[in-house]
Amino acid sequence: MTQTESGDAGGVPDGVTVTDTGTMKRAVGAAAVGNITEWFDFGVYAYLATTIEENFFPPDNPTLAQIGVFAGFAVSFLVRPLGGLFFGPLGDRIGRTRVLSITVIMMAVGTFLLGFIPPYESIGIWAPILLVLCRVVQGFSTGGEYAGAMTFIAEYSPDRRRGFFGSFLECGTFIGYALGATVATVIPLVSTEEFASTWAWRIPFFIALPLGIVGVYLRVKLEETPSFQTLLSESEEREGQQAGAGLKELFGTYWPAMLAAGGLVVAWNIPNYMLTSYMPTYLEDNVSVVGGTPIDSTTSQWLQIAVLWVAVFIIPFLGRLSDRVGRKPVLWAGSIGTVALAFPMILVLKSGSVPLVGVGLAVMGLLLILFSATCPSTLPALFPTEIRYGGLAISFNIFVSAFAGTTSLIMTAVVLGTGWAYWPAVYLVFAGLVGAAVLLKLRETAGQPLPGSNPAVSTEQEARELVASRR
Image (cartoon, rainbow, N blue to C red; front, side, top):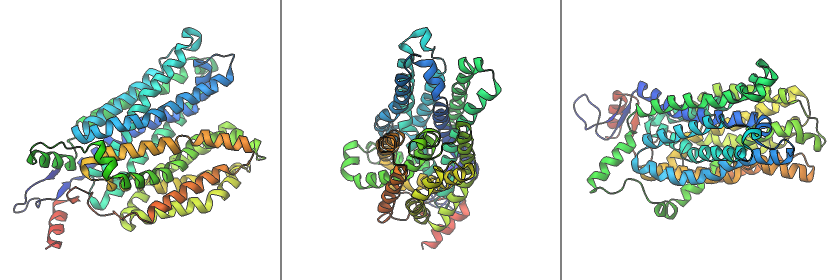
């Protein structure tokens, strides 16, 4: 149980939050399952792009079909900032748990309904329209999901273990994407060609609904985070003052924190979408235009899936490392490594040698997870409790949509337009430099209470030792 109580003999000292291990595990599971649902959809949609083209768009116009599938992907990023603007401030007013229950079920329902859309040959133009509508629902809900999950875990975690527990949120990301990619890759291998092209490809989308139901169940069983409970209590003492700060205050007072968050989001998510979104296209198609050697799609997919599954097991160790040595050293390693290794990575990726390509993807994945394991505990510490959800949701989604979500489109355009193979390296260098610029002024937060929150510890004994050390 998580609690903040008045001090008494043998009890919890006044002004200290104690989170027991069982509650913490449930909180991590409740937050991570939503991320699994979100990225499961991402992986399925990316790996079934060709099948979606064949089912939802005119068969006599392949160019239009490709544009339509990309539009379905892009529209979810266009509406994410709107979702952040809506759900973020709402989470600061009515609570993290309520909003996260809404977002996870919206994501699951949007994905589930996509699997039921009839093909183009049955309903004509309504097929792509319904596809886009489902993607709008998914994108809008995602705008409130990830920032809320970061806030939720950070506010539940003990100060000395926030990096470790926060890293499991990104385990959910990699599990979801890898699971979606694995299911989408395996289904054509284990079913007949006819069944795979008609109904088997829909099965992964149906899986999203039970995942979402599990997420709602886990979230509604948990109390509101200790930080938000304290905020509500203080608001009542202030004669009912609204808990969440307004958008005017957020943009007027906390814009430096929003820019810092945005810079870390850019440094983190450009490599993320470079690996998960653009690299399959680069390795299988674009590389041949720039004088490199492509590899077949099946090999590319399995190499990427292997990197993602390995990352799942490494991320918690990096999260724990950030608790011991600090967030900034780990993030510095990610930024400097991205700048230094960007061009060598692209050099080996265009070689056509499967072992070298595997090494290149593995290095890219390792540099990515230096951010993935650390940012979920770093970003929430930039904002005080009363505007944490809103500040994270708005800054995260604006910068993801503007810089990271467009990675595949930008890279395809410049690589094919110029015939130069190293534009992905240039974009990675840009990401690493942005991250370094933020880190120059970023305050170290490892082991420290979140702004506006009480110190948080794992045991009552640790709480008493903390109070004694301050006397």
